[in-house]
Length: 218
Image 1 (spheres, rainbow, N blue to C red):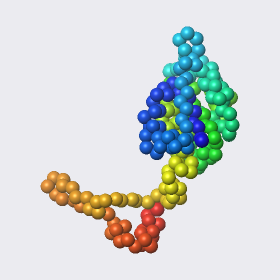
Image 2 (image 1 turned 180 degrees about the vertical axis):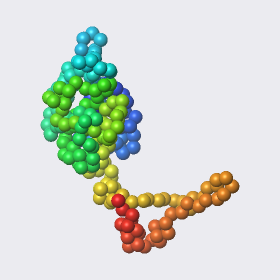
Image 3 (image 1 turned 120 degrees about the vertical axis):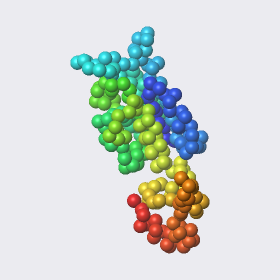
Image 4 (image 1 turned 60 degrees about the horizontal axis):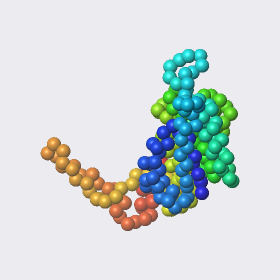
């Protein structure tokens, strides 16, 4: 079973997605496991501090290295076997692609570190994480959404998660798809519009259908 260990200040934000649909079924089938690791209880001192102002001045707060080190160490101590890789989500990281998802799917344990605020102490990237990953050229409020993206994309590579290997888009390709009704009728400003399914897809001629899909495949 592949396990995703998600280190987060807000681990409760993950459950609604990982408990639903394909990922939820994969968890129930014990194909994957998602282990949320709460960072706040590992904070420093009486008030469980997890962030401080940056050295050198500047706006915002920076997540401290100590709680993250404690969290990763805690996870590593509990891992009994298998290959493990630790990922820090960062706007400066390697762009996450399907090839990266395939590569990460080879690991038994993925430790996903979710940043917040102005950023994460650089010593996490230098000494704790094996790599930094970005899911796109934009800025989010935290690493929880990137973690969910990685969990979803990597899980799809695991046999049995999708039910059929042919469901993988990289195998079947990406092309326009339609379903019933064959004609969708709408009325706008007194005028009727009909949105139709291409006739070839209704023909039952599998050779023509495959040729049509090949011509529209990306």
